[in-house]
Image 1 (cartoon, rainbow, N blue to C red):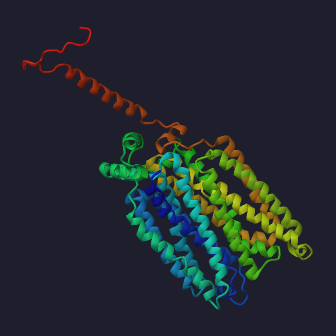
Image 2 (tube, helix red, strand yellow; image 1 turned 180 degrees about the vertical axis):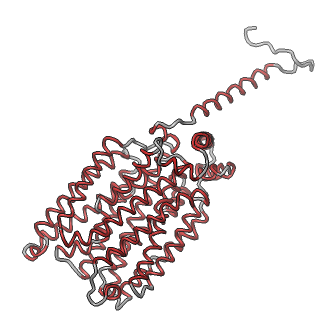
Image 3 (tube, helix red, strand yellow; image 1 turned 60 degrees about the horizontal axis):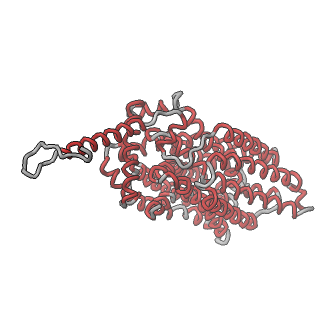
Amino acid sequence: MRLIIYLIALLTALGGLVFGFDSGIIATTFGHESFRTTMYGPSQANAALTGAIVSVYNAGQSLGGPSVGYLADKFSRKYTISFAAFLSIVGAALQASATHVGMMIAGRLVAGVACGQLLAVVPVYIAEVAPPKHRGFLVGLQGMMVAIGFGLANWVGYAGSYASGSATWRIPLAMQIPIPIILMISVLFVPFSPRWLMRQDRIEEAKQVLVRLRGSDANASELLAQEVIQIQEQLKLEKEQSGTGWVTSLKALFSRRFIRRTATAAFIVVQGQLSGAPVIQNYQTIFYAQVGFTGKTSLLISGVYGLMGVIGTALYLAFVADKWPRARTLWSGSFILAANISICMALSARFGGNAVSRNMDGARASIAFIFIYSAVFAMFFNAMIWVVPSELFPMFLRSKGVAFAVFMKSVVAIVLSQITPVAMEQVAWRYYALFVASNVTAGILYFFFLPETGGKSLEEIAELFGDTLATERIGEIEVDAKNAALADEEEGDNVRDPTGEEGHRVPQKGQ
């Protein structure tokens, strides 16, 4: 694989870093006394407002995700990424300068819109420029960036505890700004998606991009020619069968023909929420308090928790990406998560609350299994929940399908963010049972119903769902080329004889 593809994927995957940092920084922000006083008043506690600050961010994602279905197809993938980065800067500025809870909520809403767009468009862009055999790794780089963002946010939040006054949380929130500035400007220099260019009938530009991505040596040129023909013919077939209008395409997303892919993509992304990992990430200081760790100790634990996600995603890139089948990765990871969170539930039940004063070893074991949970989620899901949905759809539905999946994820996240603070107060450790059940259910569904998409081109994956491929057209083109070559050979048999007269057939061997 060419270095330029790595660089392009790493650069656009900064969108994952923006999301990870923006999502993770709120967890440590809640841990600062100055923030709680500014937002909630002298009581320093308001479960409803805490849930609102988290849930409005997810509400923003539910708005930003669907907008990608139009923006990415109309204005290109890379311009949509740049616009989303700009919105992220605006949202971060509002949060860092917030003087009351309303301003904070507004900032989280704008940041949520931006991150919803980034989550939907970045994996689509990377999937469309990546060669099939490396697509799991390259799209997985977004998962690595998300993990790095979470980990970085936790350590920045911990460092903020050594400041004084409102600087303890304003400076960490302001650190959301530099990364999207870099992304907003630098993404303008990456190439357009070749598939998007072909969709716009900018064929020559698409070929030039593919030459940059695949190389120009003899072997690469042959593969490139095949890829160009396959993409062109598949796009023609899609236009003939489904039309070109945006509204028509949106209706097709929920048609009988495509509903299975739409539901599968949405389920995989939603299950990323129902696995329990994002809930633990956002409310980890509450979980730690239940087993006796508060203040700077809690923030330090959050920093270590963030590192586990980076380690887990690194293990995915090294040992799982494009090496394990997609389906096996998802179902085995689901069952491992279910077992892990069952242990967390048992330890919290036994050593949580007042019991922690009698057995600190049990409390530490609870924290240890939360760390393991973070690493397991990162290894099996942090990247994979974006890899598979970005592969399932044909070109004219890809951005819309992933956008819908992000929308559904955001809706579920809103519900979870609202009920989690109340659930932790009312049912405590029993809340874990929801995530045990969801992981077991997901594992069963992945095992029996998820088709394997690894190693196939984006056009070939459609065949797994019963789509008609353009292979017959490609075959006809190849046959026509062979017939033309044979005709040229026959014409070559009639050559000028030594006397200069034409039309005399050269005697063939054996004649």
